[in-house]
Image 1 (tube, rainbow, N blue to C red):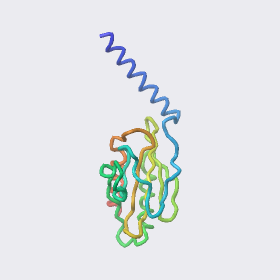
Image 2: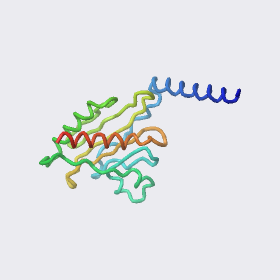
Image 3: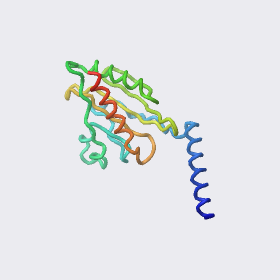
Image 4: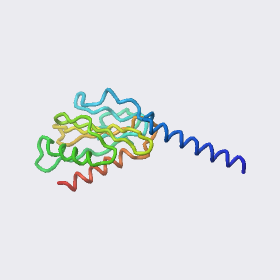
Length: 166
């Protein structure tokens, strides 16, 4: 019984320390310096299972290609340049808890999502791909081996709201 108490105390202390570290913004990680569109592509998915990318298939030898794959977002009907769809995305994202628009530059939108408890930051990019006529998307956690599906769930929630806004 004494061992069980020690284990429970150790778990409680670890949780409390992690929560304090999060509140002090020590778990945010560094802002990536290689985001954006380069040669018609967003950054590849992370090399660990904590990201999603609609362009994962462009990286055939990538170890997370299949698990990171997600469909791009469809543009609004008649939106030939993606402007109306990106404006709708901006409105949707601004209403989401922990969201902050960092960059909105022409056909590109970059947002950060911060979790409420531990203050982990996920970087999310949207880019209107004129060749494909869709919004390419990439969302990745800065820290950790796994995001427990949070990035995929967030993009699918955005997709659902975008479809409802048509």
